[in-house]
Length: 213
Image 1 (cartoon, rainbow, N blue to C red):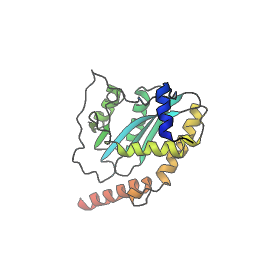
Image 2: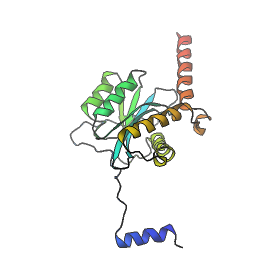
Image 3: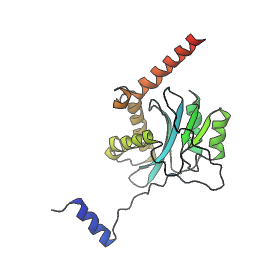
Image 4: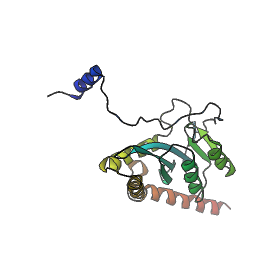
């Protein structure tokens, strides 16, 4: 009987490690414009005040795909998502355009990945009048909510199913995000679902604005 620490020590001593896709989903580009971080000291209360996006990898039986999620900061509601076999900007831009059809945030926050600082992505935001905010290097907790989302996705869906194909992954993630938005209760949201908070608080905000006018 041995514990995990001894196993790790012996693996290091023998130079052994598992073969798996490394988590390199964000690559900055030295010639693209960098945007300032706009969320320092900002109190995020209503829905659609701040959106943010992130990319992770989803394993398949052979290989992996990349998955993007766009989320509302206040409610944790997943506004749109997509998967791609390549980590380019195209599927990010299409997901962004889909999310912007239903609402528009005041601020959109991402890391400095080349997909998010691409001209197509930033021009879509600027054309919609959205302020662009980007995490500084080392600010690993700026998108903490989406990091927790990815953890839930992988432990509650991906690791429980062996996706054979890209289509299997798409069907599994679609099933999970529907559950996440509409059924999964969050302690931090007062044991409500993201759907309840996003649409409930949005309606309250609209009613207040109507009374003000």
